[in-house]
Image (cartoon, rainbow, N blue to C red; front, side, top):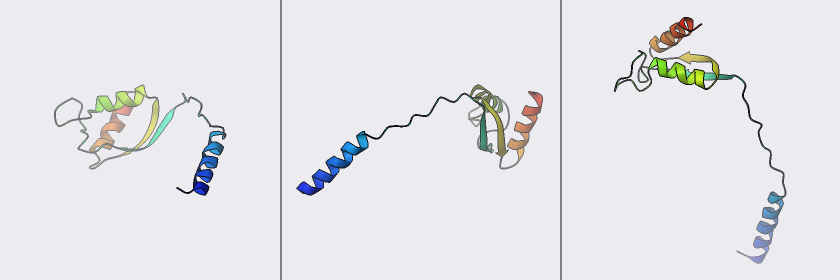
Length: 92
């Protein structure tokens, strides 16, 4: 590195240290998951099994535990979407 280059790098580093850092406030409000796929690979029936990594009860519990109040879901085929909608109706 040339002397001039080192001077500029040092100046930029010093300037960046003097810039105030913004911190996000903690958020505890409701969440909206606008993109949920619940395909066959995830499993659409309720019950843990080797071929079912994310049973319906687990998915619903995760959303509830994390404060997710609404989702826009789609699946391939539509069985996953239908299962989520039916579970929602049963938990109201």
